[in-house]
Image 1 (cartoon, one colour):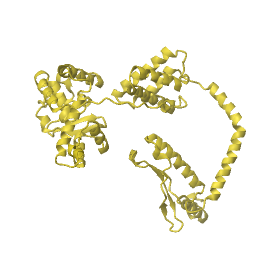
Image 2: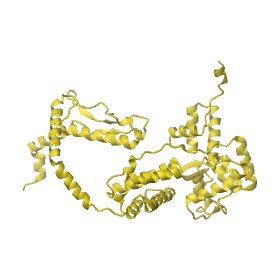
Image 3: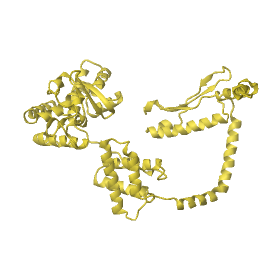
Image 4: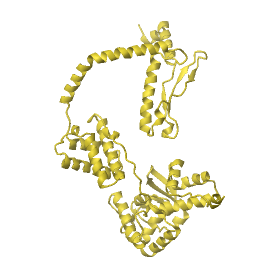
Amino acid sequence: MFILNDYLADEHGIEHDLEHTLLKKKNFSSPKIYNANGNLSRRWYVYFSFRNPQTGKLQRMKNIYGTANNYDSKEDRLAVLTVYRNKLKQLLQEGFNPFEDNSKLIEKRNQKKSDDKVAESISFDSIEKTKESTDAVKPSISINEAFLRGLKLKDKLLSDTTKKSFKNRIKTFTDWINDNHPEKKTIADIDKRVVMDFLNEILERTSPRNRNNYRADLSSLFQALEDDDIIDGNYIKKIPVLKSIPKRNKSYSKEEQEKIFEHLEKHDKDLLLFIKFISYNFLRPIEVCRLKVGDLDIKNKKVSFKAKNSPQKTKIIPDLMLEELFDISKMDKNLYLFTPEGLGGEWDTELSNKRDYFTKRFKTKVKDKFGLGPEYGLYSFRHTFITKLYRQIRKTSTPFEAKSQLMQITGHSSMKALEKYLREIDAELPEDYSELIKS
């Protein structure tokens, strides 16, 4: 009986061919991209190894940087390095050897390019005619249908908070098209000029920051349409982002903070407790709005919540905060900690509405009372107490030690993010330099 498995294992010729093929494949490693884990402050490159003919071992070759590190976005760097990697892989497969003279290979490639150009020139007219014919019959769906399709594709990728603003901006753009370009019916009718006109109008009516937000959401939608082959390309990516100066919440002075706390102690203790979660636990206002009774583990002094940079984060509850808390041991763990009616209750509304409620409540109870401007808000308490904590730690620690300890408390995802935040809120100020000027 003929047994194929035994034949293949015993046949010397096949075994020799197989061994030769495997050895040939192993002459070089597949080129890879090093992206420094997304860190744009470090250099990205393509790397590979090739078998040294003298040692017989794979040897790491010189990194290939090209122009990749001239770009400031992860997408652009990755796009450039992907081209380098693919070209390098193609060269290696064609026989490129970094230990030998590759002049003949280059000459052969140049000749092939020349031949390809001639062939391309000959067939250009027929290709263009075919393309025109194809484009003429290419179907295009309506604007509303395309946008609904795009929104459906994005639905599972957006948080509830982001989803509402995203849909509102797309609706605003749709209404603007209906009012200003009623002749445009299909998604193919929308081009870069139309989007630019819309964004310019948003800029005139509002601000560069709002215009950039519209641009970002429209680009995200059109990218989803491109990925789903509904449109040929996302031209919105080529529309530049305008420089805008974001408005920052200003920190309170020691006197201002104490006056506010004293006032709320008498007139709104629930709002004061809300603010103390921001101040003592360094939570963001929207994170406090998410808190439920079950998120607080009083026995182990911990609080769990969904943070800006993490789906689930846990922090300790400092004793200073525990002293302010009421007894929640007998309360339903599914109740929200803060509601308009009081502490511990049902509150069925969107998260953004909850944040807006406490923002308005703070304005009525505090900002109007003390004549505070728009640069002050609930977020200002987080800036105030992080600054206070950092300066206190700095009295006995080096800047690096202080930031390392502070990062554990505030929950920033990286030292770079914390340092950027501290610069923005002016947490670290220099000592008096009068003597240096005098000298």
